[in-house]
Image 1: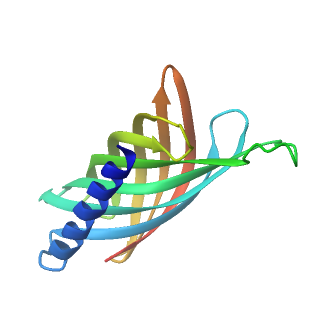
Image 2: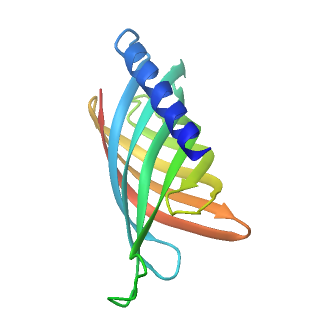
Amino acid sequence: MKKLLLVFAVVAFTTIGAQAQDAKSTNLSLGVNVGIPTTTGLSIAYGADLQADFAVAPTTKITGSVGYEAYKIKDVPSGSGIKSTFGIIPILAGAKFFFGETGKMYGHAQLGYAISTTKGGSGAFAYAPSLGYYVSPNFDIALKYLASSRNSATTGSLNLRLAYNF
């Protein structure tokens, strides 16, 4: 099931990338992020994502993204056989709203599903609110909270996302 979802996401974003070259109202961005986990027992979070934005109004875009987020576990004894990191693949859809007349500052809300990359791991509900700013037409920066929740347990991190927009 996980492989099927991943293949679906890759095919969808490949198609979106091809459409992005024909429509100025659509853009694709590649982002990297690093952050501080909000979950006890974790020391750092880092990852990358591919995001597509579709303009639906002058100040609103519908978004879709897929990525990878890794979390480093604190205090793993060496030689214990326990992995020191674990990861998720968040698949998110959302809306981006621009503030003011310049269209540079935005709020972004996303919901979706996070697939665990750990063998035998399962999926979880995922969400990611953020605030961002377009430094230039090709570069934006955002402060993003990414979290996944399952059975009353939440893993999350406050991340700085740097993105190149195509």
